[in-house]
Length: 174
Image 1 (tube, helix red, strand yellow):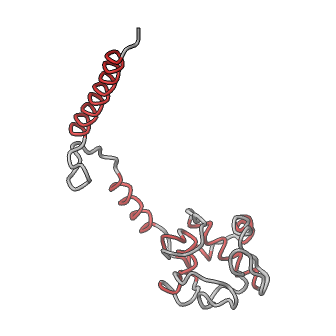
Image 2 (cartoon, rainbow, N blue to C red):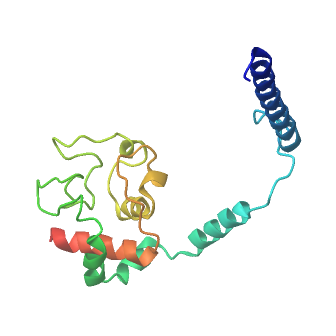
Image 3 (cartoon, rainbow, N blue to C red):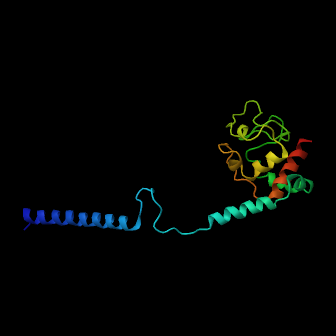
């Protein structure tokens, strides 16, 4: 009924099927990948328009008004509402650190200057003092402006929101 010849045929059929799958995988890999390990260009590249997006972002940055103009028209109340995003990590009281350092009197304060707070050192590489300009660009994209910073906030994409928050921080210090 079930002898060794039947068992041998079954094992041989399984091994043959496995070899056919391996051969099919090898053929498919050679058809769809040119370089194998990324050493060469793809066989077919789809244009996603990423270069155009970078050019548009640069054009938008060039169209932004200067920080001084934005600060002149800043709304402190709107800045206070936008600052609610920051409250999870930062406090405004003197000496009150949260996950992030206190933002009390941040304008014209030296970067990484709060005693007892463990900074990453990335900010010292790009700025010495928290000027309006430095704070404005940091709030736009913290990790982009100071690569290596511990701050995980995505940033404020709208220029007026950044100016409003800076105006609120300055008013809160007074």
